[in-house]
Amino acid sequence: MKKLKSTVAIVLGALVVLIAFQNMASVELTLLFWTFEASRIVLIAICVVIGFFLGRITSTHKQPSQEDQ
Image (cartoon, rainbow, N blue to C red):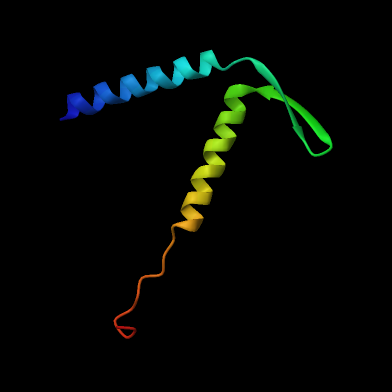
């Protein structure tokens, strides 16, 4: 099991590095009145982090207590 976890971690790490190198190009982003220039991988990372936090915020459900039932 430990060997499987190590293999999966190495493969995922290699994928992340490959995706990062594939998306090093600089892109222009226009947001309302501002124009930014950043690499694609930075924009992808920002979108992933924002999506993660939005998912965490929207998925927090209050567990019904025993008194409510």
